[in-house]
Length: 113
Image (cartoon, rainbow, N blue to C red; front, side, top):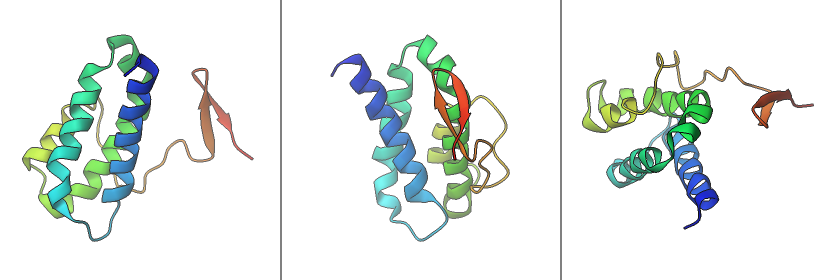
């Protein structure tokens, strides 16, 4: 896979995980492999890419963690794996979207209509 494809693959897995675990019933048997791929993909990214995207990742994965805690528990192995790739406090809930009504372009948040 080319570098840009690696970034897209990682982002797609992380974003789809957040959507899959958003507060509702879920089939947890998919989670070990899925979370493993997200964590592995994160560590395969170059440090400069991780640094540039870390704030966005903190939100996406933080909300996923907040969705998983009621289902798996605060100290579950899968929750801890995801916690290992975020660098800030968890969002207060899976509904916390600080960047609502914005998109990111060339490192800047742009308001959406």
